[in-house]
Length: 495
Image (spheres, rainbow, N blue to C red):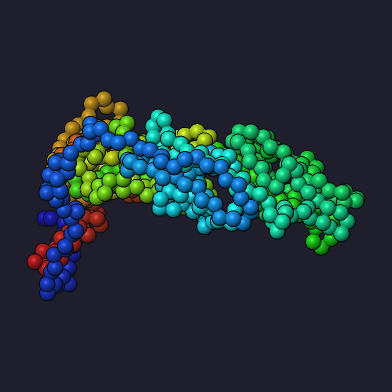
């Protein structure tokens, strides 16, 4: 006689048969595959001539240095005619602070200070603050940039407004020290103060970006009466510092100091490894925080990359919060020779930073996404998924019981993927009680992927002990097996 469990399953299957109705039509899923790879494009790429060995005319600045003296409110034009700069970056600077890099503005006053298509720098409604002996137009050539320096003196006109006076209260005045704008280098210390002749002396309260100075580490910020001292300044201390004199009035006087911290670039990368494939569009991204704003360059194999029509596109200075900017390198039609190590380099007068991004065609590391019992209770089926933009050639699965030195090595069956998504299933049988670990890697045309993170599972579990999250175990099939049989029965009924 059949065991009760088997009889119960047979009765369940017969009951389900009447509920499963075949569908009238079944539509095949239309999976969107990889972007088609145009072999003709690859052949054209291979036929491109490498012109690095051909001598080219050196870049030049044809304009001459000038000194200009104007009245405030005038329009100023600083010329910089250049030739043979197709493979070089051009920049305008004032006092070593970038105004423009190519057509990208690096000044907040870009509506008044404009770079024309012929590289002329135009300053509309010039003010005394625009005066400088250091307006530089530069061709950024390594190791020696080509520089032309102009001088500009803007004299105050009779109509020119003077700086606003200190604020007055009905009892006196309040002014800030050392001045209303303070530039400080990262790592230095600064002391800001509020001076007042109000009697009796009021309580001075300090605010940073309209928030009262409170809960700061006393090793970093010290408030002492009318003064606030910041030790070891970093970029987080940039902002508006306000001092308020509590003089008993409804509108106590307040003055402000803008603190600008100059610091060297710091780079973050969205992905340190970018997976791609032949014919695909590949995108590498770095996020840069710096003041003054940094100049960004991309390098591969120690060679600086430049825009290349139909092949390489660069997007610089995409605005983000604070002093952060996003910089993107796009390779429009990736080929095998594009794979390798890329470097994003950021530089400003305070220093530089470099981060590395790897572009590769190998599969991504596999990730475990499920496990289920083998129907005869003799083992466990582990399931992984991964991405690959080229067909998978083989898999290598290694597993062992914790404490064993030797790995069991097997090669799961390779099945076609859906687009760039591949699923791997493998049944592991004859497991002994105890903890096991398994790792998987895959190989395509471009090589082996990195090994997956070790997956820990158990070879034996009490039947009524719940399955822990992110773990798999061999346990009694019970309801799970019954549900699988019901689903299979419905599936075959619809055929």
